[in-house]
Amino acid sequence: MTEVSARKRIVRCTSAIRPLFSVVLPTFNRIQSVCSAIDSMLLQTFGDFELIVADDGSTDGTVELLKGKYARKIAGGKIRLLELGHGGVCAARNAALKASRGEWIAYLDSDNIVSADFLQTFADGIKSHPDAKNFYAALMRKSDKFVLDRPFDRKMLLRGNYIDIGVYCHHRDLIDEFGSFDSSVMGIEDWDLVVRHSSKYTPVRLGRVVLAYSDALDGERLSRKSDMLAGSYERFREKYEPDARPSDADVEVIRKSWFFDSEWYMAEYGKIIAGADPAVHYLVRGWKNGLCPGPCFDGRQYLAKNPDVAKVLINPLLHYERSGRKEGRVGFLRRKPLLRQTER
Image (cartoon, rainbow, N blue to C red; front, side, top):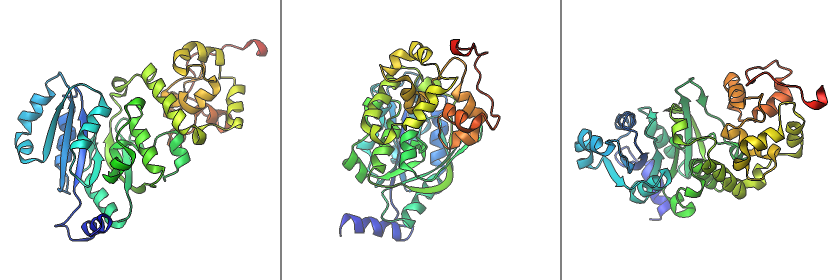
């Protein structure tokens, strides 16, 4: 029996013969939240899975806590605990992938909570689409109840990631075909993985909320202004720039905007943009990294005040100049603007 026919047999047969999931959970010094994440996985209605917890050298007692609280689950093989040296989230996830035995791979971060039908949703998708290699569901952000769920569009994906790794599931064949997580793009490694996979396999959208996403620790994960993240975006751009580069018309709109100040942008983020054209950098990467186009416009606040704009993943200043101004949108001023020399 070929591998493909065997996979089809597994997903088409009765519930006694079901595809096995490996769920990858990396953690580093998250003793305050990791048990909630694990407990949510242990409440799954679909029970044929292993949970691989890859501890990235925690120093806060995480390993000792897990060994005590989940001793029976660890002994029984439902939870597999990997004790690693501190190498970062990519190394932790990659170690878990290497150790995984499941036919399908799903992911969970140590500060998120999955619904009880998390794996059942993917199992149903696999059964309904036996030839598919990857799937994605929807998430709800805890802070504001915003639901992230949109049809697949690769060009839109290259502009900004709307498929969180926590709602993504793929066949293990993709590990051999595309490799694992790329540590050279640390901070956006999950986005990079989905982009690589979708270059050949269009993921099936399942349209069901299966994850409560926490953004409370975003600042702790990685500073939005860090040189590391900036470098990651530069490498990401080099890989995918042909499809991601903004149009000349978009660049012109930004350059002409009263709120875009190229000199201020260079002075504020010079180390981050590494010599790139300020307008192009802001359009392609800056706004996604929380950077402001000038001292008087806060893109993150604009998106927070206008969730319909945030949902379609458009540059906030571009949206404001094209339609937001006429619509009377607000929620962006950082401080009272000063007139430019040419406008006095």
